[in-house]
Image 1 (cartoon, rainbow, N blue to C red):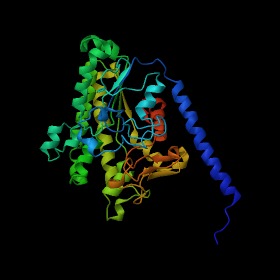
Image 2 (image 1 turned 90 degrees about the vertical axis):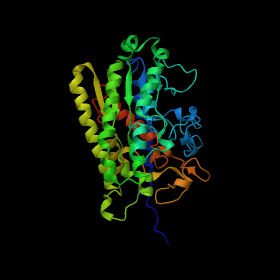
Image 3 (image 1 turned 60 degrees about the vertical axis):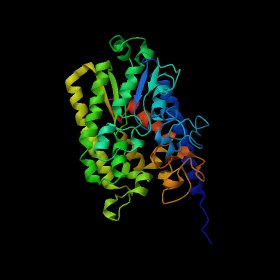
Length: 382
């Protein structure tokens, strides 16, 4: 016979649920009240962490054959239907736009959209390295040819007449009063390597190439007139269900006390360290004329993973949406959006949405950490 559940235990659990919900909705309100009117517009570049629909507008993209986020239950929390966002609801870029009094960013490939208040060049599968470079090292798979960082920057240049009605030169004053977010990008470069046969050490050897391309992208934006640029690092990939499932280790010492894969997290730390070094060089070259902000995805995510209750969560690694397989509710052939996969009833209590991407609740916390700190250096609203 099971022991009776103590009344105090039930009360404590209920209190925890109420506190988590209260904190979440209070933070949503706070985020939406600050920053109104600070920027003319916002322009975003990146991958699936911030794509607001380009992959679905770009119907010929090979990635659509493999990815399932155009299907329910994606989008269930805020929009009530799939929007081609890789989450149950809003992304970090959505929360940033709302807090700054700007509309949700339309995908740059959307015909007839109004881009005067912002545009989103991000697309699922995007890489920092050019596709030709990936091909040269044996990774020329079509899924990585959706829009590398240099391609997205060209998309942005092509939009300038629709953004500010002028040439790159005449648009500079308008862009100087806009917010730019370059990334997170680079994660797919490592995905391409790690999932297609590269060792972690070999992938590590290409980190300088990845971060140099990101830094070069920052310089190109500055040349176009950008002044305020947020550059996020990469996440602790060794703590996500996709990697834990697809790249397991037989060596127990490869796992840390939280069950995360050390070699993968070390790769992410190395990327972030080099990226911050390169951004330091950009700041040194331009001085006070520009404000380059490093958004610390890794530390914020790691803090949540180490202590979920502190942030109002009950689960960290296990996916909210999946078919119930494996140790983390993640199976590549039965992932979120595929037949048989369902979503948890309370995604706002979970950190991982589909084993790869965060829930809306986590995205909200990320955005708040960038806007006010302490996870952006300096904070956007500093």
